[in-house]
Length: 131
Image (cartoon, rainbow, N blue to C red; front, side):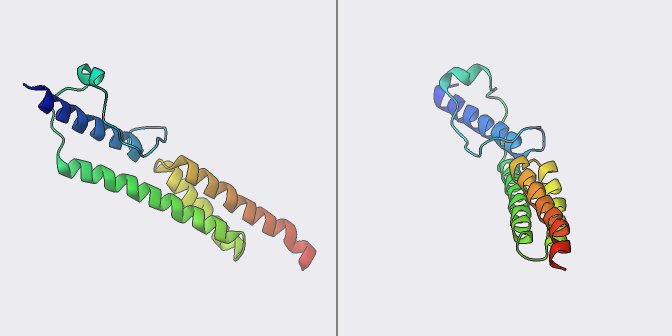
């Protein structure tokens, strides 16, 4: 087995592992979206006999994209709740934020829950002063 095919197998295996980590399906942490080529010293860690199928990589990329989309929608709804319909959009932002958090997008989910809660709480605290 030559070094070129070993490097390609290591690269594919590393990309597959990185996508699994980023998808949030098998991990309790959120990682950056960069995928890097492993160093040559990592050859002993990744086995060259396992091939990564294109369908598996496509499925993992789709899962990462879907998780990020839910997080951004939750953040948009929570931000909108600060300006219009604070109760309706605030509660929706909280629910979508919890879903995004569970799906692995912890940062956007946390911000969405916090902003939605602030909008709902501010509404109920300020309404008596303006009514």
